[in-house]
Length: 318
Image (cartoon, rainbow, N blue to C red; front, top):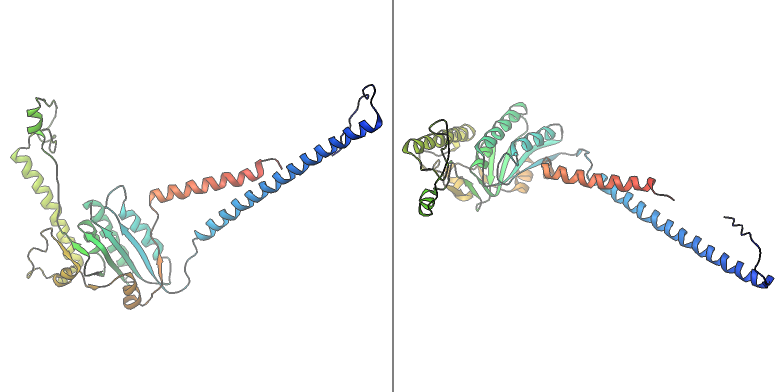
């Protein structure tokens, strides 16, 4: 960098004074240059650090398929609902599993209190569909803390069900509940204004008295769904269920794993490690669980932040 300073020297100045001012200016300029150089080095350091972090994240989230024999693991967790849509997650997970020829067996690790009968029914049918197409690959459900109600509906589609002796299993029943606030609003002097077309359109409204006819309709609907649940379990479990000796098996009660084995709700005791090692014969577990919607949003957010930082490496002046 070359700087020309032009102008006449002030009156009374001496060459020595001019030289002193010039030396001071050169020192200032040199210090400014050094400071800019230090800042540039630090900018490079942070940009390279961000790039390294980005590369590590990409490497750790790679989609390369395992090359050795292994057991595929799929997690079934949480309340079964349209928000979580476990049926869709199971379907996506199973599609990925069956693409890999090194999969020797599948374990669905279940931890769920149940939920939507519709989502449970869809998941049940999807498991049976994939099993029919890939009959050579066994599919087991392993219950950890709980596999009840809709979760057991899904589990009954598996080849076998394993659980811990202390697990909670079963609860083959259907429940529908609401509140009746009619007595409260009468005490408060509140009048409910509701207009309907159809005598049963306000069924379930907690501020409207329930008629005997409506109570009967509700019971018929619950009984119909319960019957579908029972048929699915009987189809999946077959003669393993000891119904004659245990008439309350479809009463909606839950069983411990120890009790469940006696009545035929599970096949044996086990966990994901013992089933993979001793039953399937492929102890290496590989998680194939599809991402939930919030996980996708989170990963996309991280990816967007990384992309902005990388772009900033080229946008900023050097």
